[in-house]
Image (cartoon, rainbow, N blue to C red):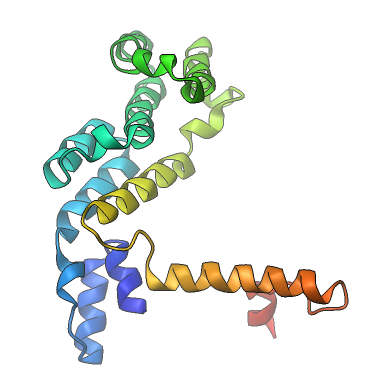
Length: 195
């Protein structure tokens, strides 16, 4: 389970150290393209969306053609990085060339409006859309791309550990609803560790 999480999230060196200390062997399917996935992941985290797109197309041909939401997120990330760098004219030109076609699809219109609104501010970090400039936004795009690349390679989108946590959360919520207010309080890792 730990190994699955490490390889899923491209922690290859840590996984290798884990393997050497436990004597386990790496399943072949997880070692496939982990270095390229890590590079793609890091490019997104660094805000270099165009390089991430290029490597994604090499590793998983047609993935972005078939996943318009992800392609939109990556192109939008590049637009945001241009705005962050105060390259407003370049951002506007990029938006007109690469993002305009998404404006014909209703589900993208509101997001496009938010991205374009960043151009109205000399200091976009102080705009109501400041969250688009956050590291968390990049992280969300990187995670989505990693899951999509894994799915394209017919690997699970989530690691075993993540699935167990998701399932435990659902079970806990269900039990709380069934038993009512007299049940145990919600689990808190902080409270558990402070005992």
